[in-house]
Length: 205
Picture (cartoon, rainbow, N blue to C red):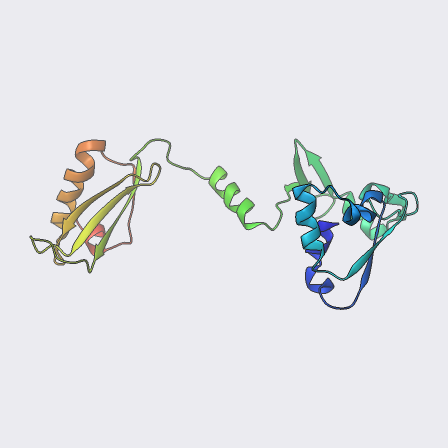
């Protein structure tokens, strides 16, 4: 019931009352119980935002209360055809665009899930400093050697950071030497280096 109220919140909030039919008999007396759990107390606080009343309806009369009660013979031919295009294989839901097509994994429209799948399917570094990124940061207060920036090296796996002070006019040769002194001498040569294509990196680095 709480899920349904939250799902249709924008349609149900307001002064107009509505009725909730449920086969959960204890919900009718929950508000009058002198002993409420913290969870139920939170739910009642949530329910108080809505103007509704609860009416009990036995499960045998409330045949739409559970998806298991909707039999396939009550579906239209189009709905039955859609159902037969889905198949559960090894815990993954497969879907066929056309009955003769090979099955494809059906991915819900969920950004977090899509991100996890991309991370799982694409190569990722398995050792520290095999893949690293580097970038300049300028506009900092000058130190005693007139350095107003830093060259930042980041391990893409462990997120360990090395940084070296630089001047605004740092050259590609100086940047390469800082890489040797700050990264190569400690971790060796990385397999992948990611940069913002600064000319000091894309030239004779």
